[in-house]
Amino acid sequence: MAKDAPPRWDRRMQQRLARGEAAALGELYDRFASLVYSLAHRVLDDDAAAGQITREVFGQVWEDPHAYDPKRGSLRSWVAGLTHRQAVHRLRQSGSAELADGEGGRASEELEQKVRRASAAARADYIVTSMPAPLRAALELAYFQRRDYRQTAADLGVTEDEARRRLRLGLQLLSTANPPHQDGLSSPPGFGERRR
Image (cartoon, rainbow, N blue to C red; front, side, top):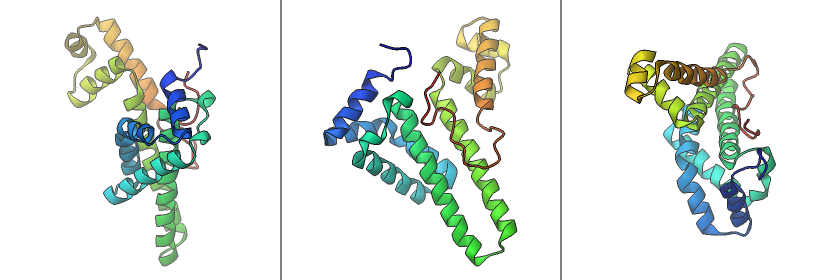
Protein backbone atom coordinates (compact mmCIF):
# COMPACT_ATOMS: atom_id res chain seq x y z
CA MET A 1 0.00 0.00 0.00
CA ALA A 2 1.32 3.45 -0.92
CA LYS A 3 2.38 5.80 1.84
CA ASP A 4 -0.28 8.39 0.96
CA ALA A 5 -3.11 5.89 0.46
CA PRO A 6 -6.08 6.49 2.74
CA PRO A 7 -6.90 3.91 5.37
CA ARG A 8 -8.64 0.80 4.09
CA TRP A 9 -11.65 1.66 6.27
CA ASP A 10 -12.17 4.93 4.36
CA ARG A 11 -12.20 3.22 0.97
CA ARG A 12 -14.49 0.43 2.16
CA MET A 13 -16.85 2.94 3.77
CA GLN A 14 -17.12 4.91 0.54
CA GLN A 15 -17.86 1.73 -1.41
CA ARG A 16 -20.54 0.67 1.09
CA LEU A 17 -22.16 4.12 0.96
CA ALA A 18 -22.09 4.05 -2.84
CA ARG A 19 -23.95 0.72 -2.74
CA GLY A 20 -26.59 2.38 -0.55
CA GLU A 21 -25.89 0.42 2.64
CA ALA A 22 -27.84 2.19 5.39
CA ALA A 23 -25.73 0.39 8.00
CA ALA A 24 -22.66 2.12 6.57
CA LEU A 25 -24.25 5.52 7.10
CA GLY A 26 -25.04 4.54 10.69
CA GLU A 27 -21.45 3.45 11.26
CA LEU A 28 -20.12 6.66 9.73
CA TYR A 29 -22.51 8.69 11.88
CA ASP A 30 -21.39 6.86 15.03
CA ARG A 31 -17.77 7.58 14.21
CA PHE A 32 -18.01 11.22 13.09
CA ALA A 33 -21.23 12.78 14.44
CA SER A 34 -19.57 14.29 17.51
CA LEU A 35 -16.81 15.78 15.34
CA VAL A 36 -19.34 17.26 12.90
CA TYR A 37 -21.55 18.65 15.64
CA SER A 38 -18.66 20.16 17.62
CA LEU A 39 -17.12 21.81 14.54
CA ALA A 40 -20.49 23.24 13.49
CA HIS A 41 -21.21 24.41 17.03
CA ARG A 42 -17.80 26.03 17.28
CA VAL A 43 -18.51 28.09 14.16
CA LEU A 44 -22.19 28.85 14.79
CA ASP A 45 -22.41 28.85 18.59
CA ASP A 46 -25.96 27.53 18.32
CA ASP A 47 -27.17 24.05 19.33
CA ALA A 48 -30.06 23.90 16.87
CA ALA A 49 -27.99 25.18 13.95
CA ALA A 50 -25.17 22.72 14.75
CA GLY A 51 -27.71 19.90 14.81
CA GLN A 52 -29.10 21.01 11.46
CA ILE A 53 -25.60 21.19 9.93
CA THR A 54 -24.91 17.69 11.28
CA ARG A 55 -28.01 16.34 9.55
CA GLU A 56 -27.16 18.18 6.34
CA VAL A 57 -23.58 16.90 6.25
CA PHE A 58 -24.61 13.26 6.69
CA GLY A 59 -27.41 13.76 4.18
CA GLN A 60 -24.90 15.10 1.68
CA VAL A 61 -22.54 12.17 2.31
CA TRP A 62 -25.43 9.72 1.81
CA GLU A 63 -26.62 11.39 -1.39
CA ASP A 64 -23.20 11.75 -2.99
CA PRO A 65 -20.56 9.42 -1.52
CA HIS A 66 -18.59 9.65 -4.78
CA ALA A 67 -17.77 13.29 -3.96
CA TYR A 68 -15.17 11.90 -1.53
CA ASP A 69 -11.85 11.34 -3.29
CA PRO A 70 -9.68 8.94 -1.27
CA LYS A 71 -6.60 10.21 -3.11
CA ARG A 72 -7.03 13.67 -1.57
CA GLY A 73 -7.11 12.65 2.08
CA SER A 74 -8.98 10.83 4.79
CA LEU A 75 -12.73 10.48 5.03
CA ARG A 76 -12.55 12.23 8.40
CA SER A 77 -10.88 15.27 6.79
CA TRP A 78 -13.42 15.32 3.98
CA VAL A 79 -16.38 15.18 6.39
CA ALA A 80 -14.79 17.89 8.54
CA GLY A 81 -14.27 20.05 5.44
CA LEU A 82 -17.93 19.65 4.43
CA THR A 83 -18.93 20.66 7.94
CA HIS A 84 -16.68 23.69 7.99
CA ARG A 85 -17.86 24.96 4.63
CA GLN A 86 -21.55 24.50 5.47
CA ALA A 87 -21.21 26.09 8.90
CA VAL A 88 -19.35 29.12 7.53
CA HIS A 89 -21.93 29.41 4.75
CA ARG A 90 -24.74 29.33 7.35
CA LEU A 91 -22.93 31.93 9.48
CA ARG A 92 -22.56 34.21 6.48
CA GLN A 93 -26.21 33.72 5.52
CA SER A 94 -27.42 34.66 8.98
CA GLY A 95 -25.02 37.60 9.05
CA SER A 96 -26.21 38.75 5.62
CA ALA A 97 -29.80 38.74 6.86
CA GLU A 98 -28.74 40.90 9.80
CA LEU A 99 -26.83 43.20 7.43
CA ALA A 100 -29.95 43.72 5.33
CA ASP A 101 -31.64 45.08 8.43
CA GLY A 102 -28.63 46.92 9.79
CA GLU A 103 -25.61 49.12 9.39
CA GLY A 104 -23.85 47.88 6.27
CA GLY A 105 -20.05 48.30 6.17
CA ARG A 106 -19.22 48.10 9.87
CA ALA A 107 -21.54 45.15 10.38
CA SER A 108 -20.01 43.44 7.34
CA GLU A 109 -16.52 43.80 8.84
CA GLU A 110 -17.76 42.43 12.16
CA LEU A 111 -19.33 39.46 10.38
CA GLU A 112 -16.08 38.66 8.57
CA GLN A 113 -14.14 38.92 11.84
CA LYS A 114 -16.64 36.56 13.45
CA VAL A 115 -16.23 34.12 10.54
CA ARG A 116 -12.42 34.27 10.84
CA ARG A 117 -12.51 33.71 14.62
CA ALA A 118 -14.99 30.86 14.32
CA SER A 119 -12.98 29.26 11.52
CA ALA A 120 -9.75 29.48 13.50
CA ALA A 121 -11.45 27.98 16.56
CA ALA A 122 -12.92 25.15 14.47
CA ARG A 123 -9.50 24.49 12.91
CA ALA A 124 -7.91 24.38 16.37
CA ASP A 125 -10.55 21.91 17.59
CA TYR A 126 -10.00 19.74 14.54
CA ILE A 127 -6.21 19.84 14.91
CA VAL A 128 -6.36 18.87 18.57
CA THR A 129 -8.78 16.00 18.01
CA SER A 130 -6.72 14.76 15.03
CA MET A 131 -3.26 14.92 16.56
CA PRO A 132 -1.63 11.77 17.90
CA ALA A 133 -2.68 10.89 21.45
CA PRO A 134 0.80 11.45 23.00
CA LEU A 135 0.90 15.04 21.70
CA ARG A 136 -2.69 15.72 22.74
CA ALA A 137 -2.06 14.33 26.25
CA ALA A 138 1.01 16.55 26.71
CA LEU A 139 -0.86 19.65 25.56
CA GLU A 140 -3.85 18.89 27.77
CA LEU A 141 -1.61 18.55 30.82
CA ALA A 142 0.25 21.77 30.01
CA TYR A 143 -2.83 23.81 29.14
CA PHE A 144 -5.67 22.55 31.32
CA GLN A 145 -3.67 21.48 34.34
CA ARG A 146 -0.99 24.17 34.01
CA ARG A 147 1.87 21.68 34.10
CA ASP A 148 5.34 22.67 32.95
CA TYR A 149 7.38 20.28 30.80
CA ARG A 150 9.00 18.65 33.85
CA GLN A 151 5.64 17.92 35.48
CA THR A 152 4.24 16.79 32.13
CA ALA A 153 7.17 14.38 31.72
CA ALA A 154 6.57 12.94 35.19
CA ASP A 155 2.81 12.60 34.63
CA LEU A 156 3.31 10.88 31.27
CA GLY A 157 6.22 8.73 32.38
CA VAL A 158 8.57 10.06 29.69
CA THR A 159 11.86 11.94 29.71
CA GLU A 160 11.88 15.70 29.96
CA ASP A 161 13.32 15.90 26.45
CA GLU A 162 10.42 13.79 25.14
CA ALA A 163 7.88 15.97 26.99
CA ARG A 164 9.43 19.12 25.46
CA ARG A 165 9.38 17.50 22.01
CA ARG A 166 5.71 16.54 22.34
CA LEU A 167 4.74 19.99 23.58
CA ARG A 168 6.72 21.70 20.80
CA LEU A 169 5.20 19.51 18.08
CA GLY A 170 1.70 19.93 19.49
CA LEU A 171 2.09 23.70 19.63
CA GLN A 172 3.50 23.76 16.10
CA LEU A 173 0.43 21.91 14.88
CA LEU A 174 -1.87 24.27 16.77
CA SER A 175 -0.09 27.32 15.36
CA THR A 176 -1.45 26.37 11.93
CA ALA A 177 -5.01 26.93 13.20
CA ASN A 178 -4.87 30.64 12.49
CA PRO A 179 -3.13 31.07 9.14
CA PRO A 180 -2.28 34.55 7.88
CA HIS A 181 -5.12 34.43 5.29
CA GLN A 182 -7.43 37.41 5.57
CA ASP A 183 -10.41 36.06 3.68
CA GLY A 184 -11.87 33.83 6.40
CA LEU A 185 -12.52 31.22 3.72
CA SER A 186 -9.51 29.00 4.08
CA SER A 187 -10.22 25.45 5.12
CA PRO A 188 -8.63 23.94 8.18
CA PRO A 189 -5.36 22.13 7.58
CA GLY A 190 -6.04 18.68 6.25
CA PHE A 191 -9.64 19.46 5.27
CA GLY A 192 -9.87 17.74 1.93
CA GLU A 193 -6.09 17.62 1.61
CA ARG A 194 -3.68 14.75 1.88
CA ARG A 195 -2.16 14.61 5.35
CA ARG A 196 1.61 14.41 5.39
